[in-house]
Length: 495
Ligand SMILES: Nc1nc2c(c(=O)[nH]1)N[C@H]1C(S)=C(S)[C@@H](COP(=O)(O)O)O[C@H]1N2
Ligand SMILES: [Mo]
Image (cartoon, rainbow, N blue to C red; front, side):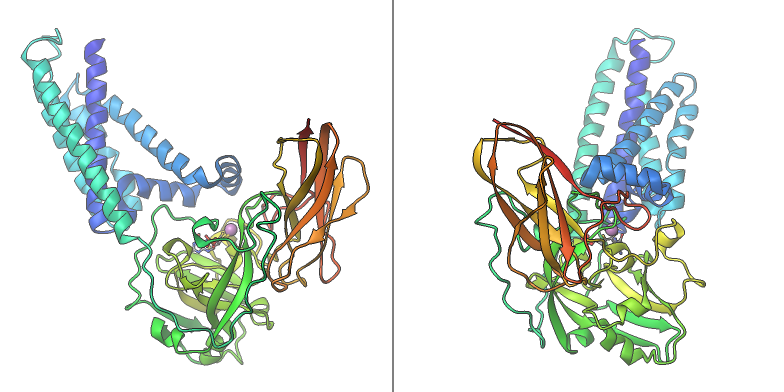
């Protein structure tokens, strides 16, 4: 029994050594090819949409950690089995352990890390099983015990060292680098002072880049060299054009306050943020490619790793402030938000507009080419739905009786912004909330309503009206396929 446990542990340790060695080699070559991450990315791309939505809803921004953790647990369980198999024949276990690297080797763009993982994992297993007590002499005592402790300890230290080094090198290589940007030729007005300090607990009027929600399919950020990066416009165009980063900076730059929203945002959710974007008008870029006689209906954007995002051409060119952004909140784009350039289209959910790390825009048709989420049956035409959220009090909070404030945020991008927010407490009438300042029709708006809280349990809801007159719908919808809708209702206890 003890001996089996030991063998299982030796299998696990060998796998950890292999994973760590593979991670280190990947960090030096192609970080996305780290074996466990390669499997994780494979799972992301192959997970059916409903399961993915469930994971996002339940694990939120931790969904990726849960995914990588699950892959790791799976690998270690199989590695334990490999360890047990060595009791029969060393090669049984060694082959199973090596087989575990086949999937990442096939999925990854670079096979080297998986190869290294296989070789070091099997070598570790060979060493450990050689010093471990023989199955027949199974006392678990004697020279074998000491030897296995020394070998195990050495390998554990090596695994930790390689794993940490790999992590550090990857985060170093994918760190945010700040590049100087020129001032906008068409600057935004100073952002009005929001309600941030007047309504405690309300969402900040401007989301700091470090707090800005992040949604993408990547487990590792791409490494992009801004000096060799280019943006190409091709497909059904009069003239194929390629821009360097400096070419973009030499063009007229607009600066706009725009609120981005993710289609996966649930009613009352956090996948929304307001930032100031600096970039080149999409129309200016498309004009250089001459799309006057195109029959395309889609811009198919491709990122540096081949991920694709579709955008309806007519929406992107209807005069709204669609841009290829190079700056966010006063500096160049943070790595996780698409450095060196990304698309931003006011009023469209990010999955049909906001391609990060963009490197190509292909003018094509929906009939001809499908983007990543189109293949997964998400909508292609996906305007952001009018929405509002209660920030304070928090759901299920306990509030002191007496005078307090209900406050939150609402958005209706490219529908004239938010012109009204109403709040309902229990079965009362809809009461008009006071609005914070406006930063334009593509930006969200803070709101608050003074409230005299009576002891007991209370339900609080809110709803927004857009500047164009549309009222936030009561119709409940989940994110798939074109965004959630419905009225948020929170419950608080007043005492
Ligand atoms: N290359 C790439 N761009 C992408 C995505 C992605 O997975 N890959 N996700 C999109 C989605 S779904 C959203 S909501 C926005 C989020 O942008 P943010 O992470 O900067 O907030 O980016 C979009 N751009
Ligand atoms: Mo999204």
